[in-house]
Length: 257
Image 1 (spheres, rainbow, N blue to C red):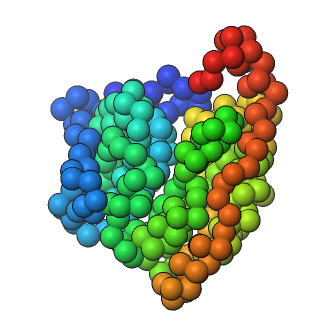
Image 2 (cartoon, rainbow, N blue to C red):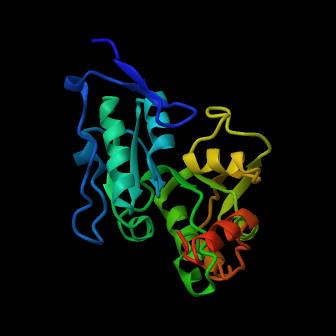
């Protein structure tokens, strides 16, 4: 049966087309007991290349990638329930069988639920900078997380990072090269020139500079990787809230998002 319609809730349109209801798929997956690695073969019924999006939001990029790469299995981890619901619904409406969305903490997932050398790509788009100094410990990219990503990736695996926060970009540039060959893109993503994520689209509309990087796993001995990670600073930087965000917060009476 032919697809029914495009999804125009966002501009540019959401990736893919909404199929007839009988073609929808179930795309939610539970993570199970804490500390147990996700069984990819049990989830997808095959062995294929594996991609994880840490904090996938509404799933815009994941769905775009899953549609374009049917031979690759994708998992998105998201802690915000409405975003999980939206991502899983839209993935299912497109009949995807190579994408699953899980509710959970993305940091806990990469630290505790991924077996060594089992992923091909790890993506981290616009991690929360946490402007409040008392919340800096919540920042997602730390030396421990960077080491966990390095361990999770297969040889030559790819870590993709993106942010519109200049201070976060400076920090990533400083710590990531300890474990990865860091390469920044000078132009928008070729596969999504208008933006891979809703946050990227919004940030560009506000005139914010986007830092996009693809980092390839370095061939290191595990003990050397641990040593390098241990020598990196924690993300205890001033995130420098943008002026438009400060004004917005003031209008709300000082409340954050």
